[in-house]
Amino acid sequence: MFCFTELTNLNRCWKELAQENLSTCKKGYRFLPEHELMYFILRGRVRLVALTPDGEEKNLWYLREGCFFNETPAFFQGSSDASSPQSQLAYSVFMTTSSFFHECTESSLLGALSFARVKEIGLRHPEMLLNLCHSFSLKVTLLAQNMASFTLETPRQRVYKYLAARIEPGSNPPRIKRTMPYVEMANLLGMHRISLYKILTAAQKSGILAFDKKKTCITVLQPDIFFRNAGL
Image (cartoon, rainbow, N blue to C red):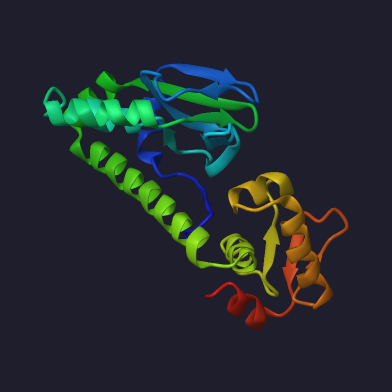
């Protein structure tokens, strides 16, 4: 169920400390990985985008309130053996082979901490660094699960699994609120938007799903078939 989810409140314990350096970034503002700061989302939404060799953008995940981003360089630079040849080589490979950026998908309020400041806080409060390691491992797990899904699952199964992860708790029949445009959703699921439309239209015609007039709320009418198609 972790596949294709939006991440929120992974780093909630940093919220107060992350308000030392605040800024508001408009929708579309991009952060490159060489920024020497970690950013904490106090309000808004940010996506991680990878660029293919031909310049096509691929959405990897979305982050909401309570999450850090751009922490990857800190794991190279902030280690105790950061000056070792192995660490320098790993960081060099990361910076020269990774073609990606973070982008605000809506106007967002962000706090910023330097890598040095994060290390300083972590030396006094090891549990804070443990939180960063935990959230970073979740992101790595998310990437691995998404890659496995692209390789092993059909487009229909990916769509159903994505929707299943967004069912409102306690709703009966199960309801899903769409939080992003269909174009972004298709990008995240690794398919063309027309393929996504066809899968959803087929589910509607077969009576598995029902949509409201604006198609922002989806109701699962046949849960057994729905979860079976999701592979759950």
